[in-house]
Image 1 (cartoon, helix red, strand yellow):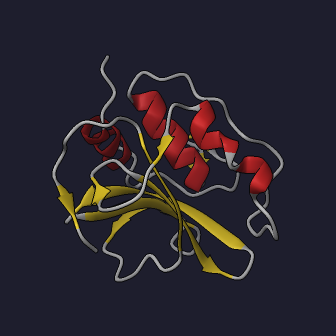
Image 2 (cartoon, one colour):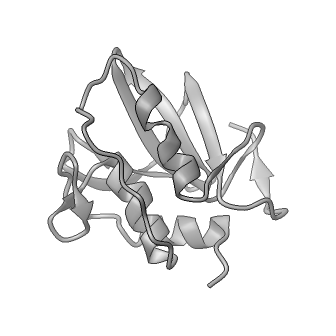
Image 3 (tube, helix red, strand yellow):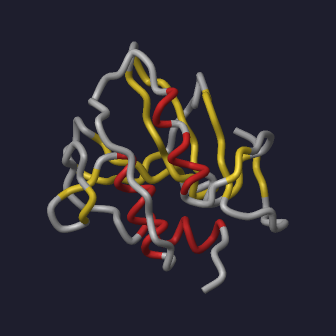
Length: 143
C-alpha cells in the first residue's frame, strides 16, 4: 500500500475515541501519543518499531527522537500538511506528538480526557519537530 499523508491522517482519525493509556499500543486497551502515531502507521500497513522506557514527563528526549526515522518519517519544515507528525512541548518536561488533519485539527492522545481526540489547537508553540511520511504535493496551510 502506498503510504501518504492523507492515509496517515485517515488512519489517525480512525483511532478517535480510543482510551488513553501510558505506553499504550493497542486501540482497544489504550494508546498514548506515541501509540497514536504507531497505530496510525500500522493502520497504513507499516510495521512499527516502538521506543521503550519513556515516562509521561521526561527532562530529555534525545534517545527517543529516532522513533520517527525508524518508522519512515522524514524531518521537514514549513507549512504543516495533512498527515504531518508534530512534536510539541505543552509543559515543562512534557513532550507530545500529534498528527495533523488540516483545517479540521489534530489527532492526539489526551491524558486529561483519557482518550484519543480530534482538537483544534490555537498554537503549537513551541513546535520542536515536524515529520512527514512522503514528499507528495498535498495542500498545505499556515497555522
